[in-house]
Each structure stands twice: as C-alpha cells, then as structure tokens.
Image 1 (tube, rainbow, N blue to C red):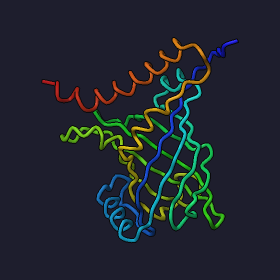
Image 2: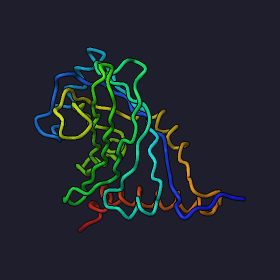
Image 3: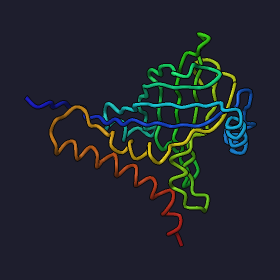
Image 4: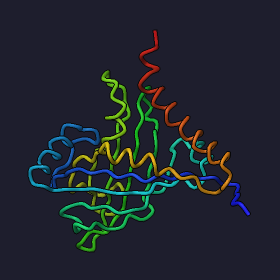
Length: 217
C-alpha cells in the first residue's frame, strides 16, 4: 500500500564552508565589516568551519503558514578551535526561512545549531543570511552567505567567542538542488504539489525583495 499521511513534509541537505576568527565579535549583530575582517583573518590562520545539515519541515502546510517558517536541522558541524577536524553532531538545530524584519524588502534566514565541543562544553553556531535589496540585485549573494558567530552555551544569550562567514559553493549548491525530498506520501501528484508549494513561496519571496521594488513607480 502506498504511503499516505495527513502531513506532507519536505527536506533538503545543505553544505556551507568558510573561515572564522576566534576571539572576534561584531559590535552589532549586523556589523558586516566585522564578519568580513574575521573571515580574512581566519583564511590567513586557516581556521576553518563547515557544516552539512539536513533541514526538515515535517509538516509543509504548518511551515508555510507560520510567519517564522521554522525547520529542524540535523547533521555535522566542524569549527576549528572548538571541534576536531571530523566535526561533531548537530541535533535539533533550528532553521528559519525568510523571517520578516519589520522593514519592507528585507528578510532573514536564521540558523541556530547547538553542538558540544572537543572540550565537552556546549556551543552554538548562530548565523543569519541577509535577504535584502541593496541596489546590486545580488540574489545569489543573499542566499549563499551566512554571517556566523560561535556562542558559549546552547542558546542565543551566550557570549560571542568567534565570528566569521560561511558560503555555499556553486558545486555544493548544485548538489543541494538534487536533495529535496518529500515525505508523508508516495503519490507523485502530492509530491509535485509539495515541491511547487515550497518553490512558489521561495521564489515569490525573492521576487518581493529583489524585483518588486524595482517595479514600483
């Protein structure tokens, strides 16, 4: 019998890679220059970070209806100076897609990834992507750059211990496109409808942020 449930979900796998500087912290959460400086220092010191996550929305209808658009992130994170080179598990991390900021044509993609370091202490990889029309029409940059801090503890109140930037490389993005999986049904029509729903929301938001402002009189 074909699998059919009331809850149709969606998941995908994402890999991001970059560099960080231990001891660096942005003056404000969106101090982009501080992240860029930390990334460059991390490149010089070869202080590397990377994650591979499977992000799941177990109930796509709930995900789309919730203004925070929350997903669950599980996988592996490597953060030099905090983990070994093989990385450590991330369990029940939080992902939010296109969160509104109260400003028109401005959204955030948020990541909160708890992990236990090589020293046995809890840490949080806390990151955001800026999805904003800054006049450059850079959709790729908005969705591929994750400004990242490492916090003490497993929540966003912990002190910042390091910061840097993670990127999706083109080759990893092409692989990501092939990882979208629909759960809760074996019906090809329901699977296609779920992918279309997600795609409509994703592309519609990018249209609202990057295209609609340019069409306004």
